[in-house]
Image 1 (cartoon, one colour):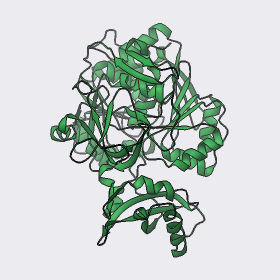
Image 2 (tube, rainbow, N blue to C red):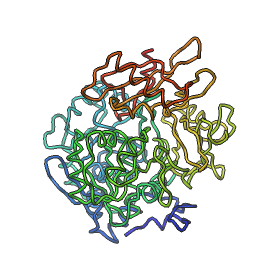
Image 3 (tube, rainbow, N blue to C red):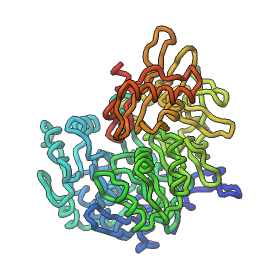
Image 4 (cartoon, rainbow, N blue to C red):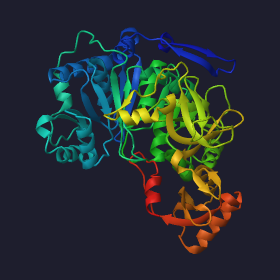
Length: 544
């Protein structure tokens, strides 16, 4: 059963492409009650989650299961003093308890703060302190309890933490605690404008920022799920993200359940393309979404047959067109790229009803009015690189755009300067209205009077057989202002010497206009990345 129609009015063309969409919802809309509990009431035995792990354990979780457990957890939270507006950290990897806990927090009006288990002691401390966190539900795995205990040592008497896992080390068992509770029996009123969810950004351009979304946020992901990921009623959608990242909200809960699809969850630690394909084939996954890193490794290591899969999508960072080509060659499936931020839902994508453009972020979502502007805020002609901004269609903040930064009103005002939301990302728009990502706005290289996006050079560089990963930055140059430098991680078997440097440089430059030529190459063993896998260009620049 698909219930999303109750919250939207949509217009599609003959090819099924979404042309217009508007949203209708009550002032007290709450995903926990109005979606999960409703589905539990109307089709309780319908599967919501298909879960497995590396040990071969399996579970099929229905909407009735979700209601039962989330109501017990809500009761546990209330009895422990968690109230509306409280911030609760959840670091549960891909454990089933994440979904129960998220729904429970939505139901009681507390703010869910998903974080990755990979955070360091310092990272955990930063989040607990900056968000005034007094409650947390965490995995027992990977030394997470020990890192948290050290990180909050001076405030631990004020903090309540539960552990999920077979081998608890410090804190009490979350499962034992909530299973003893009687479920809540009445709806707890919340407003659609209340804070529901907070993510910390990955920190590619500074300290992580707390990004706050309200209760309307799940509805904006209807477009994400239905028209970009092509999740379908009765299908099984598999987004690979760990629950600590915003991508989990894009692909592992909200939009998918609204359009009637179950979500596939594979609880693993180390990425293995062979095991991943086995999961897709065993459970007959119908749609799949993964970050560019996964597709890069799949095409480099060999893509297996995936007969049940009818759609594949990607987002999160730039992906080179050569990867699109090789993936389609080996699977017959086009990769459908999309674009958005932690601060937003899907802003642009290669949608149903249009032919995917390899390497393009696609066209603007009908939910949003996207423009490319220069430093003066004026819209630029097509083909010119500028900053992507979101223009409110009716003068109001669009659904799915965040409501505030944690304790930073000045930064929020700054990104909304001039009455538009400034993404800080640079791109250009082609003659068909498709957006082409060029990097962060401050990553654009100015060389010899030309503005050059790093992506257009990386497109060529990655096609050299010796190159596994690469990143382009501008370095000071007395003649040009900036010269173009490439950082390269090599494939196994290649030696980083002057001969290979010359070969890579000549190969790449032969495919580029002269003003885009690479002048310097530096070989690295590994790229500096955030814990979400995004390359930290600012660290590369800092090495110059």
